[in-house]
Image (cartoon, rainbow, N blue to C red; front, side, top):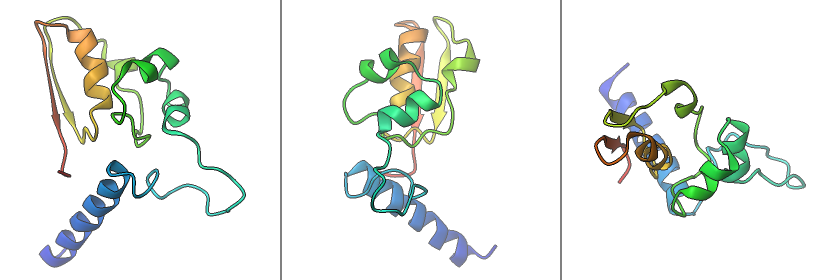
Length: 115
């Protein structure tokens, strides 16, 4: 892939996720196009991925943007004192949940490509 094409793709991804983060858009753009059907909420999407209602309620407002593709906590078996690196952390939804598991002796680092 050429550097120009790669740069265009990167900018398009940043723009789409940035619009979700600022509330200018909802979801990843893969939802229904039918005007009569409401898009599911971020909370409903997350619960569909296996997060509990308590997980969804316990994070700060705005952290869960409904953009997840799975529930890493369900398979990670995190323990106190561990270090977690979340690539593509977005608003930090999984980071906040991981912080509960690793406790004060652990560290959680979230890295995302959008400001």
